[in-house]
Length: 439
Ligand code: CMC
Image (tube, rainbow, N blue to C red; front, top):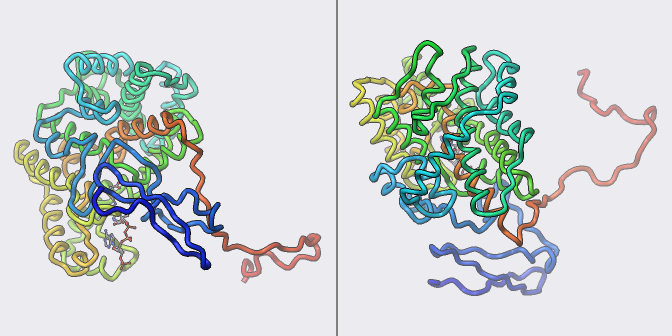
């Protein structure tokens, strides 16, 4: 494909070595260095993997320069415009193409049949401390599912059933994590509700009163989940693949994905954005002063919800979410001052040389919190909502690793910078090991 050589040459210590060039279906080029160490004795060093392709994958395509995101070839703008539901998107991401009517019906039934947790599992929720963070509970409980049964994926049907089981149970666990964090009794799923409405029912119904999600709320959350369904080799997905490469089961790998997602540089950013916006509002800070603080890197302050390793352009998800936030607030007759601050911050940052030079644009987390707030999701559940949305992507990536006959365990190397070989001394002859400790 266009101007990619078949091999590249690298000269090391006077010897020229050839490496194969791999070209993706969209023309992305990579140098296959898998034989580098054997042939040269060198390894590549790429701390934080900014230049490392860790796998070949057929699930999601991103062009960070052009701001393109496609699931299995479908642009997210098209999926959003056609109001493709989260369940359909999940099917697309996990199984490769959009479901027809019968497939959609079957999957909906599977999600319903698998929604309840085994009674033994319910008991765990009462053992977590009150106010336990729902992300910790979610990760623990997804892993705990493997104490009951570990999915065996050996053909197409068993994969679909395992995927439905995990998606269904993650939703129930997420709602139960919330209920247990506020000390309310767990609510069972209903067989007449769709995926999103059922989640909201389990989160917000109480034994004496049913919560009914409005159409606007269900639609907004469907869109939120759809836009989070996959994002190629981000931190949590790479974690899932890493765990999968040891042949660990799907539940365990996804529970590790939740743990990786929690941090504020990744999925936890949707919480950090709302905290930042509320902070600006509460302390009556000017947007200009806040931006100045970020540019001076005061106290490690960053503009949360801005910047991305891959996008050097608008994150296409952020564009859609900004429009959706506007629409939702208008239709619900809500005025949220944090949306105004977000808009003001965005404008100021996009006009500022610091952000322009570094190509920092709003990412998916910048506007998603406004939507979650409007539909009544509590702040400590924001990253849990991201997790629910990302489960299909984790499952699909787990499956790619599981299915690859040439898959080896993920095992990066390192350049060691510690002490060289030391002489062992008896305890009484050793110098103090922590000389500064008593200063
Ligand atoms: N605010 C201010 N400066 C920033 C920001 C920001 N949000 N993001 C990057 N920079 C600066 C950074 O300090 C560096 O400056 P310099 O060249 O002077 O050292 C330059 O831009 C390049 O940044 P980087 O740290 O090399 O970028 P990265 O690719 O390692 O990190 C990131 C990407 C998303 C972690 C980072 O942009 C960030 O911390 N953003 C805020 C947190 C956030 O919104 N995370 C959500 C990411 S999208 C959804 C997801 O992955 O879950």
